[in-house]
Image (cartoon, rainbow, N blue to C red; front, side, top):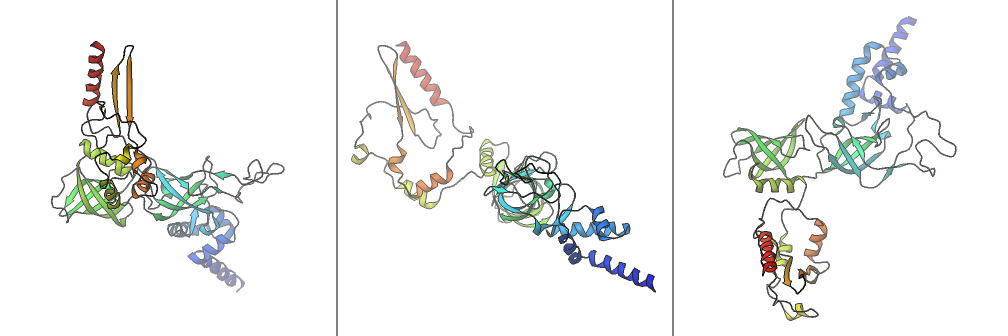
Length: 378
């Protein structure tokens, strides 16, 4: 009878831990992450329950309820510090690349209970030189801890204890905002109006099932499409809708658009910005000339190519008795773009230039060199 009661008690203990609720509660009572073998020992479970316990742990980890640390221990997710930031993924050459999350604000991590080192006098474990918690930079994300996040996404990360690198390790548990609302994809196979495509960005390891029914002309194999991602269909497969056909990847114009898209460089202007730009006069007014010296009689020449979209500087070279005199004219953009205007706000949003080198010619530069040579010889 006593043996039967003992077996029944042991069986009830096993059942209480070998279910989701019981295991989560049990992990909450342990002050540090524990490995599978240690979990068996502490809970008193027999060795035969190891496989069942491991399966339960992985299932709860997929749901984000518990996490596995870099050292292999299990702990509850709600016991870890979380930060938000922007994900940058390294190039994917073979398999899936690792990444780093740049936090929105600097963060500090308190020492984890698993650390057994004795701190120096006047300092606590994990503290900086002044006795404060050490501030960290980027968070390292192993490919297995990336979830369904993509390069450029804003995400929430759980900081994992036990990391050995210079950067703290973390696991992405939530995508807060997609960084790419449109994705360039390469056509691999076609089935009716549906195309199986691979992301053209080497930092994005994803396949797309693209619905191209709305396209007037169906793309050929290896063509590049602009796709709008939809729901997730499988581990690395997403539904998408085709927005436009770029063309073949070898086309230099397509390459330029691809670079802009992969690096989230703006490709279009809003109607308000275009309206402000169109309102400018193509001729000078008296107000424009006020306070300026009129040099319009000089035959300035621009060094921009014929296909350039803007001409913001020009030069004129005059031969002197000794050497040359170089005049440089630079567009006074601030005279036209007023603070707080749509153009001003657009400029602040962009704040960079993209020199692709894929368009234009060197004809103007060659012509200028010939001009200088002819002036020097005359």
